[in-house]
Length: 222
Image 1 (cartoon, rainbow, N blue to C red):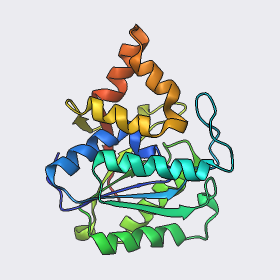
Image 2: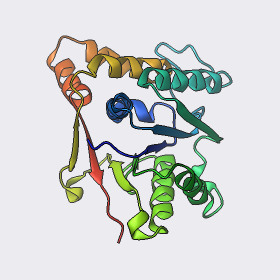
Image 3: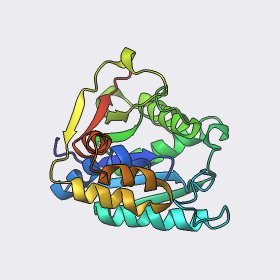
C-alpha cells in the first residue's frame, strides 16, 4: 500500500465498505492517510431486516444510518459523507448527475486514489450506477491529474475475463477489527458473522475469504 495523498471511497450502501474494503480502509487510516467515505444511500430498501428480524421497513433507514456511523467510528474515519439518495434508484438519476457529484468531491478533495466498484462486475444496479459515475468523472479529467482507480469486482457468473486481481492488500492484524466493523451492520451481516465463527471447514474457508486479504483491480481509462 502506498502512502497516498488522499483516498476517496465511494459506495452506494451502508455495509458495502465493510465486507471487502474495511481492512484496507483501516490500514490507510492507521498510516495517517486522509480518507473520505461517501455513502450514496441509506440502504433502506434492502431485503434484510436483521437475523432474526428486528427492523421494520419504517425503522431501517435510522438503523442503517447508525450502523454505518458505527462502522466509520471503528475504521477511524473523520470524514463520513451520507449523501442521502433514494436506495435502489441511482440508475434513474438524471444523466450526468452522479458524475457531477463525484467530480465535485474529486475537485474538493484532490484524491490520489479512489476505491469503488468495477463497472460491469458489481451485480446490483446501484453498484453499477456508482461505478459508472466514478469512471465517467475521472475520464473527463486530464490524464496527468487522474486519481488511481482501485475497484472491487464480483459477479453472479464469472470474473475470468478480468483475470486475477492485481491489488492484494494483506489485512493480517486487522481481523478482529474487520469482524467488529462487519458486526456494526447488525441488520445485514448475521449469517456471515455466524459462518466466520464456525469451527468447521466452511468457517475456515469464510475466514480465509474475508479476513486474510482484500482484492482489487486497477482500472485504466483509455
